[in-house]
Image 1 (spheres, rainbow, N blue to C red):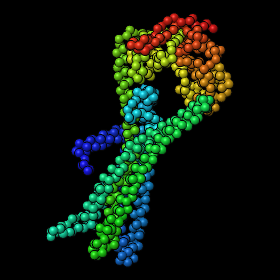
Image 2: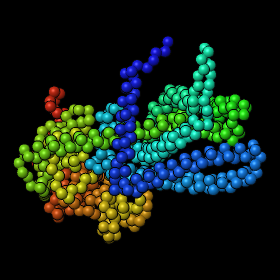
Image 3: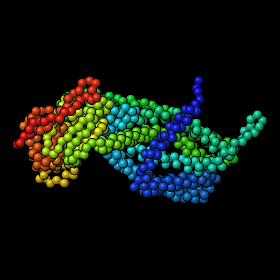
Image 4: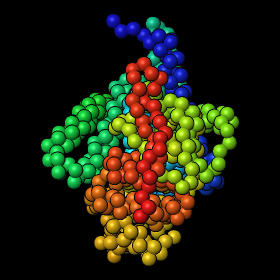
Length: 613
């Protein structure tokens, strides 16, 4: 037994629809209020006017149908040739409107996509949001159903789909409404009344064809909704599975050498097969649901072709209307039916648009949440700044600094450290004790830090895995500054000093340097970047771990000589005793017993006397 939908269920769906509309508005409105707003509004207005013009042309063509087919029935050659001439300029005007409507629509889509892409790229790259989104995703901190997976896909593909669907669907709906308003009166006047007798009483329904069109399309729209509704979730999942599959192939390409050395091709193939199996399985479910919808929409569309003739045929055969009027009724009914069937005809596109909008709004929610968390952290740190003694701006300071993990555990608690110009500090401790995390906190990118960390100006970090953009070697060496800021002599000298003389003649060679160079060469290129830019503060995180001891000592000697020449400081993370010999101070992390407020504690101790060579 089927139960009728409850009022609470109806209001829940209404509320969900209102929330979705609010989200679409929140995504759409900023562009039309931006610095490009007048061009955007002008294009939108022009597209609306062209749509109205197209509907007006359809009204004129509908009237032309009546006159033309009446001329055929009456064998009136003069009217026939006159109407052919009239059709020529009507068709020409309609073609002009259609071409410029297409062109301006595409132009608005491109401009809107360009603005939204720039807007989201700026927000994604601002305040380390791109780093924190990946950290939350891969650390397990983001456990929401709509996690911020594959932001590259959301910015590249989802924005394109959102702008395209938003314009095409909104203009289609506008066109349907205007067409309905324009043709419903025509159909009402042409259809006449439907008279019938029930129980000896006569009844008449004016505008019978209009009511039949409304009933036909309402029933069709309701059935379409219930048949096509599963596509919304399946479209959302399809976009996610496709992005995961593409992302893993990119990782295989990036780590091709490591995979080849480990002979991990079979494992990677299995991983790719698993991801593609998810793509395929979801897509098969999607096309099954689409097949069900296509079954219905095709039945619906084909029946609509003959339906007006069946209803109007008795009046035609009785002589009440002529052939031209019958064709005009059919045309008007088709326009009204097409307008009322907008949901039926566009349900698959609406499902894809809904999925795309959900992905973009979830991405927006994550960026907003990160910004709010950043504001809270800034407020906490401002309290810490006011509560600690004033320090020299040219001093590295950690005051009551606590570092947490994404899991909620506290790594370090209440850390207070200080290093001034002229010092060389070694950070030492077991793997996983938080040495690199301490560097991240100093850099201001670790979102799970509390307290105050002051980083002096003119500082550079050498991460464990340095990044080099694809392109020319000079761009990779100068990154993130433009290579034009440095002379060829300075670039070549930095490469030679970093024990990479073989690269000095390849400054303009383009390549994927992160894959082209060995691990040791990449570390030397990162050190060459430091020697080129000559910062006063250097933070080296296992910066020479892939080098032999001779090369390591040579490069550390050059880094230390540079630091002394500018009265700066080097802070290093390293395990080798040979590196410890270059540092005068030691920050050592030690594990605390179970039940302590943190997993590790840090002690500041004197280190080895630095080399003088």
